[in-house]
Every structure is written in C-alpha cells, then in structure tokens.
Image (cartoon, rainbow, N blue to C red; front, side):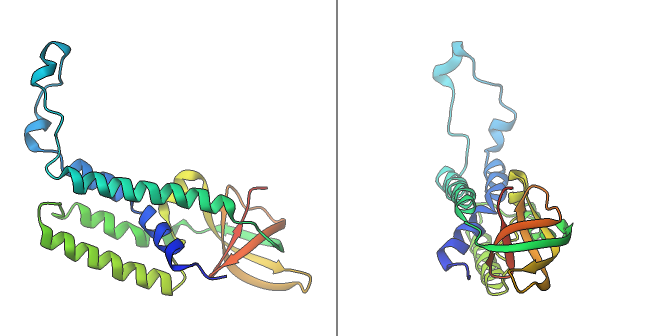
Length: 194
C-alpha cells in the first residue's frame, strides 16, 4: 500500500508541530520578555497581544497541531491484515536525526518578520517533503516517539509462505519476537497494539 498524497502531507506537517511552537516562542515581542505579570489591580492596562505576527504564528501552530492530531487518529485506524512472525528486532532511533535539521534552522535567524527567509524555508520544506515522500521515508516522524511509537529494523517471516525479509517496522510500544499482525505501507510494516 502507498501513502496517499494528502495523508502523507498531513503526517509530514504534523511532524513539525514542535517547530511551530519554537517559532511562536521566538515571535514574542521583546518588550514583554522583561515586563511583569498582569495583576488583577492593573488588569485594564495589560496587553494580551504579545506576538509580533500573531496570525502567522498561531496559524502555523494550529495547522501543525491539527495535522498531528489527525496523524495520531489515523494511525489508530490502520487495521493490520498480514500475519507475520517477528524473528528478531532492534530499535533504530538514529534514522530520525534527519528531521532535526529543520529545527536547527529555526534558531538561525528564521522569523516571521523576514518574509524572504520564510519563503525560502517553505520551499525547503516542500523539497524535503517531496524527497521523503518519494523515498518512502515520510513515516520518519520524530514526534511519534512522544506518543509511544518506535521504529525497528526487524527480521520477519511474512504469511504462510514463510518468506523471510529484513524490513522496518513502526509499532506503538516494544516489538518482541513472535506472531504479530501487520500492514505494509510503503517500505514500512505497521504493527498494532498487542
């Protein structure tokens, strides 16, 4: 099974929710960083517009947050139909380092104020999406770790033919040797909860 383009885009956008939060935090106006907290006695003189670009900042958080929620909901709907036997498995979190680069970029002068840099960053993300989608790596979403999903390299036997292959598995929780049910999506096998 191949990821549909829209599903892959939602998964990809959801993986950048932490980046949207970083950019939101960087958008706080400098004068509010040193300001004291509002008190009930001075409530009428308080300003609640603390962001330089509130529409852009909150839009990115909202869109990526909704995409992350849809990703979590969608992964729970995957129904594994293939019977596999896991012979051995090892966790491979190192592959997720590829997603760290855009987060580093956020601290290298990227802000909503510089529209040229933002457009360049959007082009970068589009190119990154095309590469990850075409290579079957769009599932490499580091934020899934927060929700208990892990990526494994596993030696498995598939179906009744006992074809042995080494593949990558996305599973919520630990992957132990034994019989499992899985669904193949691109180059990954999704395995449900035990």
